[in-house]
Length: 393
Image: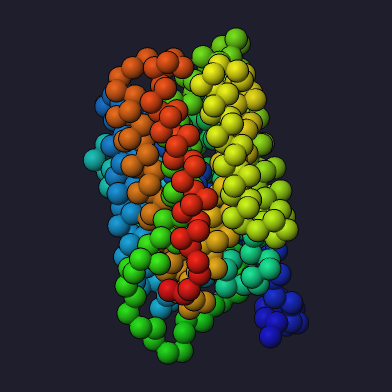
């Protein structure tokens, strides 16, 4: 039944699944921006905290650790609560902790605030996906998931440049105040535009981490692992491939646009081709892209466009497959578990990248082990998706 409008007393129609997808995409954009902006901003923050800029790893690591732990804990508890209410709480927490960062100059307090943000952030993404899956039909899922996934590319196209420009013009505290305002705005939108989703009338049975649940929750991490192996060396690699030393912003912008366009296209193609065939096509694109790079047969812009497009198409395919797995009453908890697996996969990928590089200079010969690992790892996804044959958590 439509909810009454408090200002007019009239009933307004419930938001469409498409409208909810746009709201969830905005929430995911803000959540990702809050997480990703800290590293590029830390170079400006470090002198005020009296620490070297190499301490950015501690700030990122404490967030990732608490996000993993909160996602695991939320898997067992989140399905008992209205995900809209949980979203409001986590987004409000992100707003408060981000605003507090702008007012502190203690590195210890910064770590505490990032730990609290990780707890909230690890739950926010899972809740958002749980809301979307609860409101979308099976036929709509690939297209709507693509809308949400495309929001991540907007972080590199719009979000990071916006906060860096703010930090440059007004100072880094203003950048965090801007992010906090975005979090507070999303909390308000969640409260007004997302319908309440009642928890199950019957308390669900205790959840366990069986093989099917773990495989489906880890699908997105498996999809992104080959790309994440390259991400730590992406900037120096593009500088190596490009003759113009000032072209990096343009190359990252082109990659972000390619990811955004590819995500939306994949959402439509998934319904026609099927997710597994789509994953094969994207994997073929990634393998060819890396092979051309290893042979020094592709330029910086061509590599970046294909790299980002294939990465996002693979992610849409795996997200659509894994979204069909959890039973309706377990979607929010499964989303939190999936987020924890993604954070864990990112941590493993970055550590493995550093180990494979072994301190070598970024040249095509120097990063050859990294490129081989990425190429071989990308070929694993189609076989992995064959293991995901349905069933419910």
